[in-house]
Image 1 (spheres, rainbow, N blue to C red):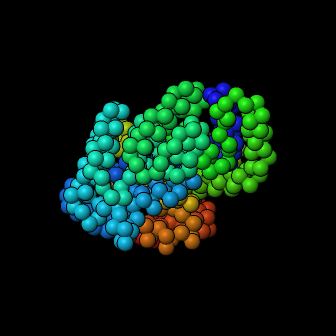
Image 2 (cartoon, rainbow, N blue to C red):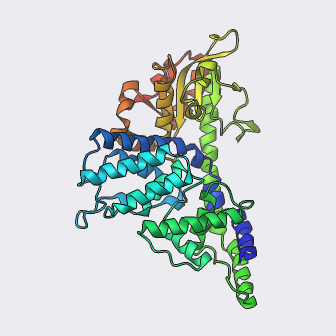
Image 3 (cartoon, helix red, strand yellow):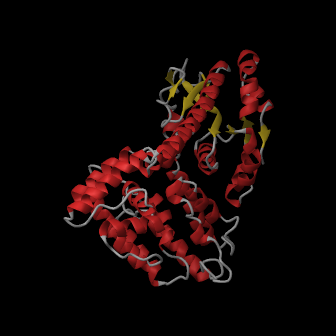
Length: 429
């Protein structure tokens, strides 16, 4: 079985339409981990303070679960388990304060612990409460806290696991999930060289098998079955034209994102600022060079020593004032830009708030959400969520692509400081 499974893994990793290339290697996947963790901490804080309320819509839980559900295809529908179903009275964490507090303790424990035993104990403690409707779908939140200990969970992953192992894991049971988790970790350990320490990779494989994109390897010595299965593997590549097209569209979107970062990079330098581009975007190709060309290579000490520096490094573009550290050394951040081409604004807002709230002397930094003109209403609706109530303190502005593209050359030639950029942007809240 395992030689055949290794063959499947190798083919799957080369498939541009498979979850490995389209999700696991997607740069935004890792970039969103911190913001989702911050969101989970906010859920815990509100439950602990008794301010969480008794509705899902508009809650901090909806914000973080919605952000998880936007993590491309493998998490599509992750929010379904948390939607309030009145006739079934599930999940019972909205009307039962006791169950709600148990859920908060569960999330808090898993956020603070760092060992496999501690995570499993927390799961078993929650499972023992038998909270109606609160099942293994919550493992999707735990995955973003402990990606090396907790695999994601959905119907397709379960079906894929059953197909690969011959198991009969059922949905909705924490005990069944824990058994599946043990088996997933065994598969991952045996194929670590082909997969990853991050259980998202093996989960992505099982997801694609569960969807029927790949057939599970035969579990017997039947040569005819093995031959048929190998033929199916060859056919997947022939049938992936649509997936290749989708991948190209995704790459075009990534290029558009980088293109806008390039506009902001060039404009910032023309206006007299030093420029930083997100650490994970620095080497993106752009116009025959790299996105980081002409940008600073390191953040100034005040930022490097701040508690939120890991998030600040991932802000799409920073403009820094020159001269505070002697000559050409970078200084205080004047403006931060998050480019939201197609993805949720949640992660970008969290990163900018880390800068504004967590770095000394940066409360006055100008914050800009840069997005296609047509996304303004969507951005405003997202910022109206209770989870973003602190945003109003910082006058976050919306900078539409159209205005930036139309005026950037004029601003670069005749503008100074941030006045020109603020003139073509709009205050959101």
